[in-house]
Length: 497
Image 1: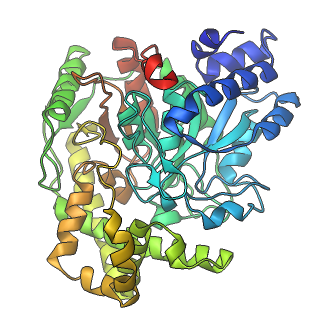
Image 2 (image 1 turned 90 degrees about the vertical axis):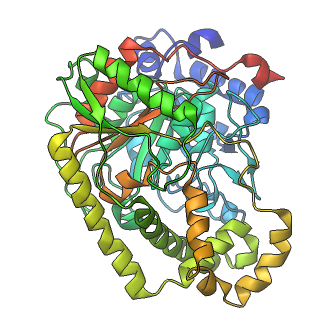
């Protein structure tokens, strides 16, 4: 098989070739590894190459639904026994995982050939993928721009054609943001549908969901069938769809009522391209027979952003403390942005944390009221086209000036000032639309419906009711048919130099 033939198939298509004996898993792995060697120097998407592991998996006899397909996992929480899960950090690169995570176990049972791990910001804490340890991961559509985060490495690898689909996770937009940046499809499951663990069964109070980034809707659909079976040890027992999720791809969607907005919940600017993306998607949906009208849930978006970040910073502080305990590292061994987030998180009192989390219920009820009228909420996935590399980089002087201040407890001062509120707003300005679905535990997807005048992808987001993953897949498949994106590729010249 030639590379152009490999690129012409999604994961389901490649698995079909393997099952029929038309190609061997080893051939597919060789093509994936060769492609990685050619393009990864330009995009820096793979943090750990596990080629020998992939070769061993390619030789086994497995009859799973994606048997023989090359696959990359995210270097965050997706543990592979015997290999480190760095979480984007330097210290954790030397700590091998003791057991497979549930997601990895299920991917192996499905026959996927795991041959590497993809880059992520430290502890998945940013909407970009730039770290002191691994450097900047770059967008295949324009290597001067970010592929988003925190599943930025997976997005870059899939968009660049290394693998047809890759592991991802989403705690504040980390599937949908990279999907929007790189022209991919990304569906975040609702709370508890896809079990996490076994180390952490309820990360970020259930706001985090494991998943994938893909070039086709059916690849994500079959992944939901693989990942979503009930886990007896999980904290949630969420009903699954009555039919296989893969059926949604060919099951016609009913006519929907969809409310849309392109106003930032943070009150910050939204780029004209993001506005056009939503208005264009609304027009497409109307042409397909859906009812689409301006509407938004009644939510204080700035308060939501603060309540999200209160929980997020406390979680970051806990992760940093555990990493230091496990490795013997000091906080100075981590990125300065991580140190700042953790310092603020350590300053969060128990009552503050619990009250912020309690307010999540109010946002959930407000979104539920919206869904009493509308099947789906349509927004931009991003407030602007993919950011330039280094656009949100902390100034170099901060690496020297901030650590002494952090040791003096400035995190407590920061967390109680208008400066911190303004910092939260600024950090969420480019990605203000995605956190709502995590806080409320609702399924949400980014669909590659739009490319900017400059040729950059810019997806649109749909947020559904609890249990609406099947419906979202149905709609995504309808959009995919009406406006195909699978054969749109980044310019090879930009990838190969």
